[in-house]
Image (cartoon, rainbow, N blue to C red; front, top):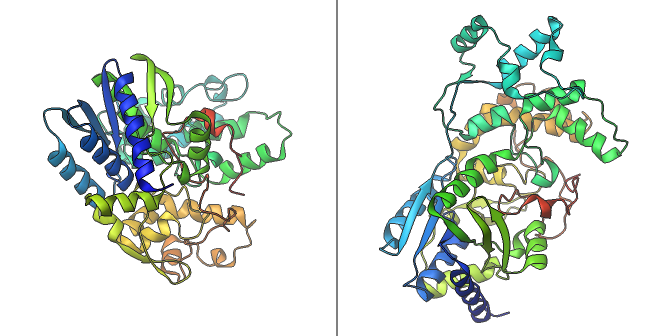
Length: 421
């Protein structure tokens, strides 16, 4: 359909959103082109409406996007529009890093006391129950070795990957929300009654690779929803488009522009996606027609696997690997556009996990891994060892590889758990 038709439908959905609200309306803003167009539509067609714009700073934003989001927040705010930048929460008490948790686990096993922290089914009672078994002397030793997360520490990306794992592969392939030490205990002590080949294969994957997408909830979803509750938001407008992923396509096809859920502060909480039928082409046509500002991130160039010069298409978090199994994935682009950040992420532990993933997917037959035993060797290889880990399965541009915190688990239950294989 032509852009004018899509604008008309978007405006109609926005109008309904304001009519549904009994308290206050919120707009989810990421600093990306889609949410910028959504905000522009709202301020153009509803200049007198009051609403809150909520920007979730995950602390791993692209510098270009962060600068743009703050600048736009300042320029487009007024007496009716309040801009809020929200950050992840902080730890309320000291906690142990993953390596320290593993040491306690091994110590309890050696002492014959492992049953003190396990449930009857072999699962860990809780991470806290394990940490409390450490003696004062052990805690002091952990502190001296930098293995303690201090109270007041922000739940940063580094904290998330330490406690849960790296965002490798999409949510459909990694839906676990429990800490890595809990997963270790489950794999080691709990007997699985499953006879499903896919389930057992999944266990083998997570046994070898420290993967989790829970960082998106911790860094983005939870802080945003907390702010929504504080502001009394009962309608949230989002720049989601059905064309972006299987999950979003399924959500829009079954729910439409507006659907209702429940929040503790709002028994009737509405999610509104005015751009549901838009495509990237529509977004850029709108931006060019109405001279809408956008982050310079989209002007940055890279060379794809075919040797073609391309521009960055998606905003997102630095270090995200949810599309790592596909050509021209997020990290392969980051290597070209932000080489220092790419190298930093790889050396911080991500590269090691990606090597393990490659070994898993190739059953140990990837030849270069036999000689690239350290991350430095792998980083220096060209073509890059990490640019093309897995073959692309989907033949079109609509995939379920991208983790989407805005689509709830009910939708993901309808997606294949192993679509990445």
